Structure formats: C-alpha cells, structure tokens
Amino acid sequence: MFTGIITGLGRIVEAQPLGAAAEHGKRLAIVAPDGYLDDVQAGDSIALNGACMTVTGLDPAAQRFHVDISAESLARTAALGELGPVNLEKALRTHDRLGGHLVTGHVDGIGRIVYLERVGESTEMRIHAPGGLARFLAYKGSITIDGVSLTVNRVEDLPDGCEFSVNLIPHTLQHTTLGTLVAGSRVNLEIDLIARYVERMLTGAVPRT
Image (tube, rainbow, N blue to C red):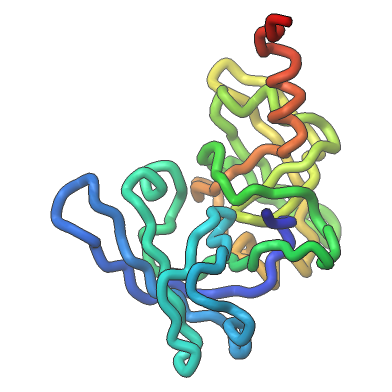
C-alpha cells in the first residue's frame, strides 16, 4: 500500500529487454536520491510513477536499484519502459502518516493531458480519462496521477470517457515529475480504492444464503 505522497525523484537510466520476444519485459535500473536506499532491501516494494514494483537488485554505493517489469505492465502503464525521471514512493508502514489517500500501486488506466494553464500561484491540469474510469471520478474525490495523490476539482462526461481537472501547487510541480509534463503527455491513473468497493457493492450480484 502507498499514500500518493512522493518521497523522492529518481531517474530510469537503463531499460534492458529480458528477452527477444514480445512477451518478455524489461529490467530497469533506477538512480535514487542520496540516502534513499538506506532502509531498502531486495524484495521491498517501491512505486514508480504510481506502479508498484519489487526491488530485484540493489547497488547502494551507486544509489541504484533494479526492478523487473513484465510486458503486461509495460503495455498498461505510461513511460515506464523509457529513460527519464520517475516519481518514487516506498511502501506504507503501519506507523506512517497517511498524508494522501490509500493507494494500491495498481494502474487502472492511462490518461492524456489535454490542458495546462497557470491559475494564480497554481496550475490547472485537465486530463482525459478512458471510459471505463469515468464512473469512478467525482468532484472532490481522490485520484492518483503518476503516483501523486490529488483532488478532483471538476468532471465532465464525454462520449469516449471523461475530462477531469486538478490543481497543482508549486511544491508539487517542483518535487514530482508532474512539473515536466506538457499537453499530450500520457499519465498513469489509479482510481480511489474506496470507489472500487462501492462500485462492486452497487453492481455485484447478491450472494445466495
């Protein structure tokens, strides 16, 4: 479990194929900030841009760790097979503050940024979400964008999905990869965990007694 509060900015510096066939994934090498890996062990979970990954190798002296990402995960996430900056969050511990909201690290879909505009001291970001996620997005509800916990400020249903907006304060832009995005960028989306259960309770079959 995670909270959507980014704890470090890393960089994917290598992306090596794990095989020649399409069903093979990649091994990623990520450089982390100084000291970030001091309490990390092989087998620990770290979210990369909101996608939960298992640490398969460590090189603390170089502040580098490795993860193996499957072809399925590569197909269902944005930019994780490419070199460049990445948001990092270590798995939640039971005594940690829950600063964002409950996040599983399972990407539900890929959104596309359609609008970025400065509004006062913050920036409004509008994202087009695929149709399957539209029913889970609500005004003042929670959404995770590339691993960052944010509040939905507006939702507009469209024939092919929905468009929702969030406001990004300068701190978020400076300390996450969201500050590097532009209109047209693809982003990982994870819906609110509670919304999953509400949807199941409202649409699931009533069990027989």
